[in-house]
Image 1 (spheres, each protein chain N blue to C red):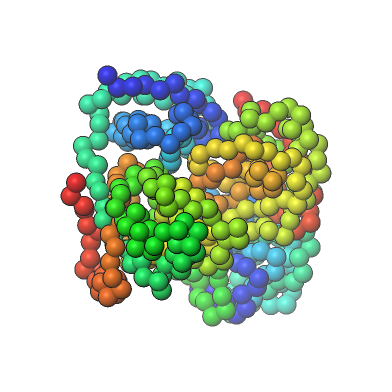
Image 2 (cartoon, rainbow over the protein chains, first blue to last red):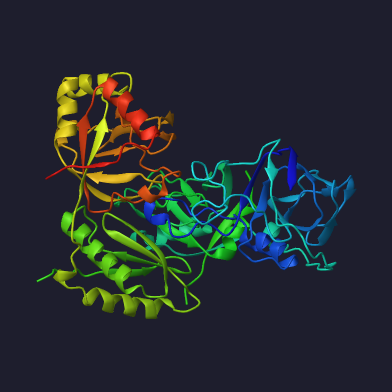
Length: 283
Length: 245
């Protein structure tokens, strides 16, 4: 078990997501940066759908009551075990009573804490991903006890993966054409693709709104399904990138759709960070 | 003969395909999509992971490890072309949703009365007389897109959305009406409250009991009836009622 001593800014439990319920309007949820979440799980030979802790901006203080192995990937938040620095992307052995805490955010925005066998918080609609009104909690808080798989066989894993630096450095966000792409003129598209864009302070697990208003339009459409990674453009020109907790339907033109890799890159961006959209073609 | 529409198939992300019918709100189009979905649910092709649809478009998420866009498009076209009128769904249900339009809940009724020059009773009457078609789920878990709001009570959304709309709020936004299944921010005008839980995670058997294509009818109830129903629902003694057409 893990006892939460301090919560940090915003931490949740996430697996790959909640599938099969979008038809009832349930967001898919799941880890925002699937590349980093996948790395943390892979280091421990976990299943890719095993639940990890997604830690945003500042980390929690956690006490382990049982021995296990952990791996942390994604943003560097200066993790410390019993006061000593430990590395991201490396398997660390944990003894009963160990305390894990985090320091300052060095790069990126989200890091992922995986435990051997995954977190065993309650499953709701076939997923452990936290989402308000579906799971009991929508973030971890001080005093919580989080279950994880008891480790029967801790073999000393020496796994170490180099960090995936492009996640924190790339500003090129690859996009496919979205369903309404063809409703915009090539001039309008070019303006958006040429623009240097920045992340506004309206950014969370539901979506990232960008600061710039490059074009306005008066294209209307009926409400239609949307996906995480969809870029919507409102009539007054707000560009919004939908993220994992986005609603399942939307009424604004869907101009682009991010590649899965680019969704991980965006998930590591925070208020004020730059990005450019780069159009790629679907095979 | 079953009318077949000229459908557009568009790639949507790495493993999504969006199928578009003509971009209008129409019962015929909705029924046509429902027939297609019923066909797919019956045939259960292995490449489909999940789907959702609303108004005039259907999104299918597929397993891109076993099928590519061109192949799935061809497969789906042939499923669509093989639909027969006899594949029609057996039954369309009409569900009765009790609503208390009391001034304690219907906090935007006074403004609507003034602007529309209608009495509250008239607005309530107009809202609770007709039948509404369910055109899809979205926005929030359990939220229904309903068509059929009488023109006389169309009312623009608020310029500044409320940060907090209560669970069960029955509201009007432009030409649409709907029920907030959870507490949520929202810009629609609140005219009442239903005790019905449209998305109850503790009662998963009821998930999706109201199907796309079904009808909804609002029934005006007093505050004491509302309180009684709330208790019944809390104790799981109340079940959604079918309205006999």
